Amino acid sequence: MRKLIVSTMTTIDGVQENPHLWSFDYMNEELGKFAMGQLFAADAMIMGRVTYEAFSEVWASRDEADPFTERMNSLPKYVASRTLEAVLTWNATLLNGNVTDVVSQLKQEDGQDILQYGMGELTNTLLKHGLVDEVRLLVYPVAVGNGVRIFENMEKTGLKLIEMNTFDTGVIALKYQPIAEA
Image (cartoon, rainbow, N blue to C red; front, top):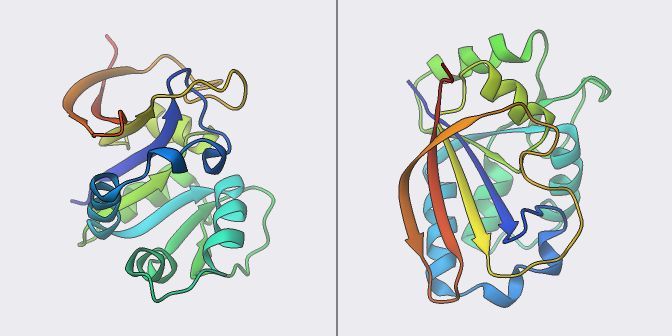
């Protein structure tokens, strides 16, 4: 059974919006290796409409000589949306039907991890239905004050810390396993 991994970058004050404005100062070889390992451990991505639209605009136009970009662009992407049309670009397929049923079927297939970047309505739905196996937070040592926050508008979710890594730049990678609330 494949694992569904939700991964997002966040500031110390919980903002995940516009990471290009606050994350690059902390990028180094060590953090790049972590990101590569995570991406190459997956053979599919799942995302909501907002992430799909933002990522496809940025990544599809990048030079594929870079292994990370080539991998990002080549992975099949499954997009959950109530508003997008059936024909998508960037190696993406619109999920038809009940998203939890479709994701459950994807997890049953042979393969590597399924990766979701960012957190939003789709994450809340997947967590609520017990479909998320790990939540990974890359916490950056910067506060920005405002913006869309991780777990915003989400239901209560219990998490068990299963691993923590600290990088030289002060970024902390936290891996959590969702736990069922009693």
